Image (cartoon, rainbow, N blue to C red; front, side, top):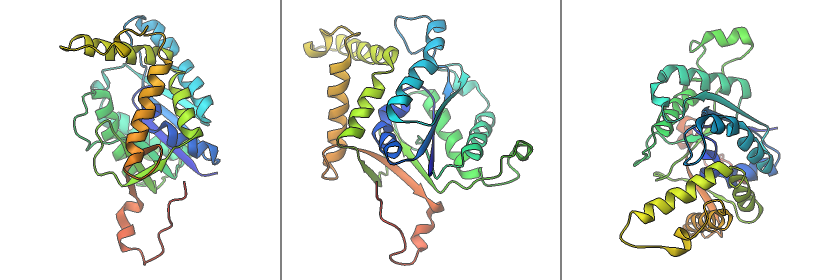
Length: 270
């Protein structure tokens, strides 16, 4: 089976940015693995860090079951403090994951996207990009060989972002992939409560009100998340004449497709 590996900072990073695409791959028989870098322990206005730590894999696995993922794992670095982790240490752990799963595609945050305010996203972006670039070089972490992990060339990397740039790949997620994306997000109960309450606090600080948002109970988030995600998907799809889409900056085959004989690059079929 073809394999994809998703490298993120937190639970729900993947679902927000690429959940429909991941659902579509799983529906087509791909083995998809998720590796989260942090323990997600600070993403709340209501729970303790200990309670959040206990939810980190429970919520992620529930979402993974909806999408159809093969595996979920977490490195458990402190949420919000990933920049304190040595960059090369995180890069090495990502290289190890790439060599273990041997993916045809790596999905991760885009290190070159502008306006990314979260330090964990920035840390993952740089470490994952470099890991995908270096995993086939045998002298990077030769100790992996002792564990039976051979160097692996990553053919394609899909970068996502809050404010994406250089977009060159649009994926149609109309229908069931979009529904699975929304259902998977709602498995992150703690994070969806956080998302709605955060948006309410932003509006409450503004010189205007949006009653259809501020009057909601943060625990009754389903309709708000559904409406918001469908709106984003429609916006992405409109650019490509699709009902709903997600888009990415894609790098494949080291850029050598520019040298490929005419007609030899296969068309995207998913």
